[in-house]
Image 1 (spheres, rainbow, N blue to C red):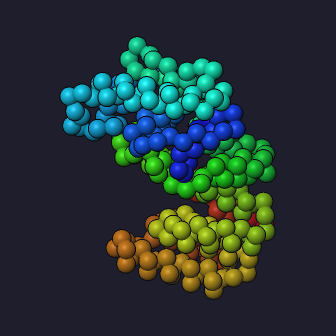
Image 2 (image 1 turned 90 degrees about the vertical axis):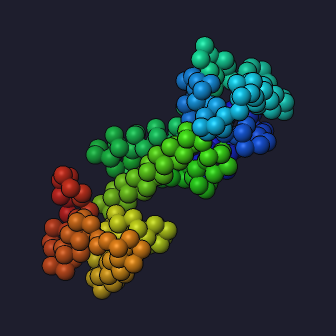
Length: 265
């Protein structure tokens, strides 16, 4: 069974799509999948479904929702029908699948492997990061309810997503001709105009591609956008990159604070 949370919930068992009806069932399954292989307590699941004011019947209602979810998962006759993938633990419930069976967990594994490979095998790291970001099909957990477990996970997954893109383009700027990464960075900068790191990477790529005027114009537009929407000036990293471009620094690179400066050729 494969459970995908990086977009609308997808459950695939033995090649068969399994529709999970109702937000509460999706919320339970998402909460269990986010802790795949580990017990999620009844109290956590009750909080996830009803928040701070659960009904008096919450425990019985949760039991009923779990029973219905189990029936849904086995009703189509796939491999899940041969065993109960939602097991009862002393304190709650456990989704007995592996981390490979949940795209959110696989994402974290891919990013960790890419980070470990980046120093000695940067091209391999690029492949791993490309695979990681390709797992997204839309906003994570978009139809899995608004409980605390899913809200916290959404924030964490978005941070991982943005970090994966940052690292991907850091490495690609070192491996490729800078002009090759400009289209992807332009898309990211347009999608996340308040995310300064993408602007920093974009103006670096533009400058190193011989487009200094475009790099400076991109910086000025971003500074104006930040001022209008947040009332802030660009951070130190972006300002320092802008100054390096103005000076036409021979050591211009994309290295962050505390990293070894590696000129981009």
